[in-house]
Image (cartoon, rainbow, N blue to C red; front, side, top):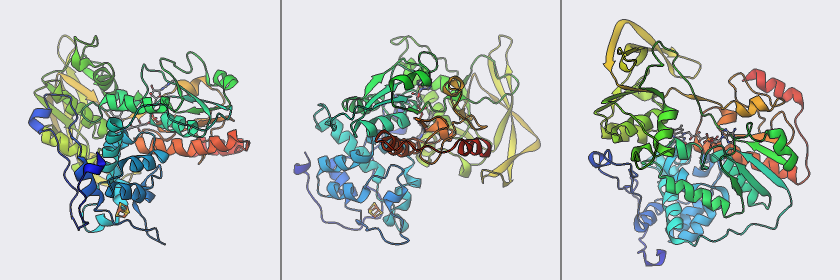
Length: 490
Ligand SMILES: Cc1cc2nc3c(=O)[nH]c(=O)nc-3n(C[C@H](O)[C@H](O)[C@H](O)COP(=O)(O)OP(=O)(O)OC[C@H]3O[C@@H](n4cnc5c(N)ncnc54)[C@H](O)[C@@H]3O)c2cc1C
Ligand code: SF4
């Protein structure tokens, strides 16, 4: 396929080549992916925008912004030549889930944020190229067993099959260790499978990435809740090392009056019903979902955008985001905010909920909210929202979705007594991901608190290097005082 593509001489092109998308009016009627992806010719043209910069003193390049250290100029060079197979091999050396990261990574703040072309023009579309190559690989390359080195005889247990766990599994399988992943749900993928909706990340793509990892010889044990079936201590009897990557899937609540009315759900429950259980295809699938005419989503991150956009696709008449700061502080990715606005989500900014009001049957009917203004920056560096007295107002809502954050899953820390946690409930780790318990590492959202896919993968990468060193014989471990300090400081 690549051979048939016409190669063009390099020229300065100020903007990224466009990524075709489904029309906003059409796409709110379906769950299909919004961006359609670039074709081979466009990918080559996009790659030709890259200057192939060399590293120099005091010069930050694209790859310095990538938490999993992909050799970005090297893979782009191969795309410039139309050598897609070589290009994806370079990515695969460092990255276990390229089709995912090419879709959901905040690359504007990472690799693309450091791109030299981006100083005067739009940066090279590194995320689009990664996505293109991963999609090309899935369609064009054979799906046989993936060669790994002969077995080292060492056994690794990974608890949780989200991006952090899958990264450790892929990296350690690639080094010849025998890896088993223990996942609580019926599929691996973590938030990629139960949280991020189909229209951003089709589940077939996540399953294909998980399949790639099992083709490396990783044993995937789904429906296995560690802490209920085996504990971490029990896993250690059968394995040399354990990596805990159980994520931050515990929903935070507002604690406001009326929060237990019918029609009020955590974002987690709502998205799990729709994505994992396919409630949007009810009754073809068994799990139901109820969405009212007016939906109010509380929060301003990616999770809130996903809830608001999902609600439109489930047929609500109006989908409102209620966020206490202004547009500039919305924590969601810019692309997601644009998509939400194009689709007709209404943003009620600088406003916070005060109370949920129900009808005589216990169903939510209104959200009482108050206008806010921004004061001085708080500990997070963002300007603190302050209530404006007397500015209360009501918004009608038959469905309210709470998307104000998630906390670490407590089950593994609760059932592993010598695992130190911080006061936020995250597992305390050192810079290599080592925990207070010898031979146990942790990473991703369970160690950092709710963050991003690529940061979870970066944690996995660092831990995999440290675990490999340990498995090869270096059993050094930080002193208990290190973890005492970590658990108090954070
Ligand atoms: C709706 C939503 C949208 C998001 N959008 C983006 C985005 O666009 N870009 C981005 O970069 N990030 C996004 N994020 C954040 C990102 O998905 C997470 O930071 C990332 O998935 C964390 O990876 P993880 O592997 O640490 O944990 P998770 O993805 O949470 O995976 C943890 C896994 O462990 C399993 N598990 C939990 N407890 C146990 C147990 N006791 N035994 C066995 N298994 C267990 C869980 O079932 C899960 O599969 C989003 C998050 C959500 C919720
Ligand atoms: S910084 Fe930008 S232009 Fe330079 S090598 Fe990386 S992608 Fe190419």
